[in-house]
Amino acid sequence: MSRKIIDTHVHVFPDKVAQRATDTVGNYYGINMECNGTVNMLLEKAKIIDVKYFIISSAALKPENVASGNNRILEEAKLNPKFIPLCSIHPLGENMEAELVRIKAEGAKGLKLHPDFQHFNIDMPEMLPLYKIAAELGLPILFHVGDENTDASSPTRLYNVINKVPELTVIAAHMGGYRAWGEAEKVLYGTNVYMDTSDALPLLSEEHVLNQIRCHGVDRIMFGSDYPLRSTYEAFILFDRLALNEEEKNKIYYANAKHLFNLE
Image (cartoon, rainbow, N blue to C red):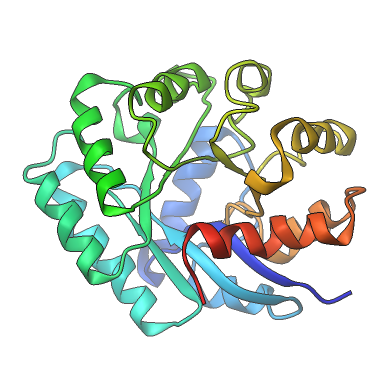
């Protein structure tokens, strides 16, 4: 059956640095990246399925790169109507409040933060005012959650955030915490946090992921590939095997993200 799809977790890079950026991520996690991070490969490998939108993002690794990185993501979205931009901020950056206002005006649909790569704790007090501004502006935040090397992005730290800033719309990547699923299931499941499916099925059984979806609630789960780790199509093949009914799959593939990001 043909389904409309929104891939909510995508990273694309300029052609000249795409392979190097992709290799850096793969080396950090000790995983084999299936794709090269270019826009062309993303679109080519997704041709076989009906992808309406790709939610593209990139976390600013250095404070001085925030504005330029955001401009690149916003420009990619202007070039391709299928691309929906999530921009970034940095805790050490200057005038981050003004940057949030600017990117909202320029068309950003949310933010992407990767605390482990950006070297800050999700729940550090200095970030809370920025989270509150993001909430006021209607900018959901997609957090990378879970890391074996640090606890900067732990599910527990994210739990602290949603309790201190309950008005913020939060998306916890990787079904609530990459390789931290036990912790995520204890503190995040059943809360108002959204989650994306990226990187769970290659490491967890289909039964485990199905139980996670049932536990957290199908209305707060969204499909994601984590391209260039894998293509949207390969992520679709893995996810579509789950014993979900058509209504549930439509919510996860499309309807939940359409609603959250206010897409047409």
